[in-house]
Length: 154
Image 1 (spheres, helix red, strand yellow):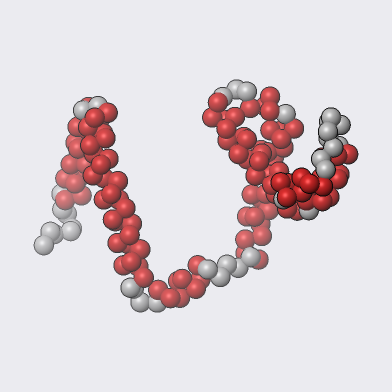
Image 2: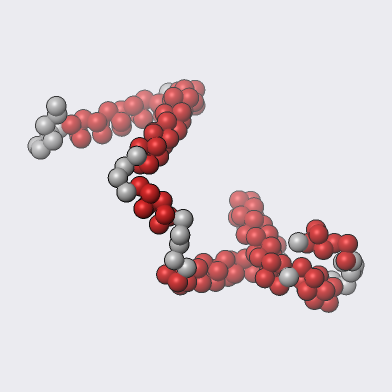
């Protein structure tokens, strides 16, 4: 049994972790890949073990019931802030993709956010009204989307 109070055990394990990490980093890509071959499955085993272990604890069913029955009233402010933030970030990229020309990764993230927000607009605005008003009336007038496109839009 390791004595916990006034012990050097935390310092020694931290030093060991730093030395192992340094060794793998100085070994280059090949050593990092070898470490990952061991560490990634180990991480998966730790996660699965912790999940199964947590289900065997007392009152686990109360925690699971709490997890899957959210109180929407307490989340109203957070959801509102998230929607406003997504709109502020997504509208410039939805209006013009020139906003995203500064970096390649920003371009990709912007397209993902923009696509999500357009899908959200279709859900809220309803597909028929989205096609009729936003695409056909306010579009570029180069092509009117026929009714056949409703399943694609939806």
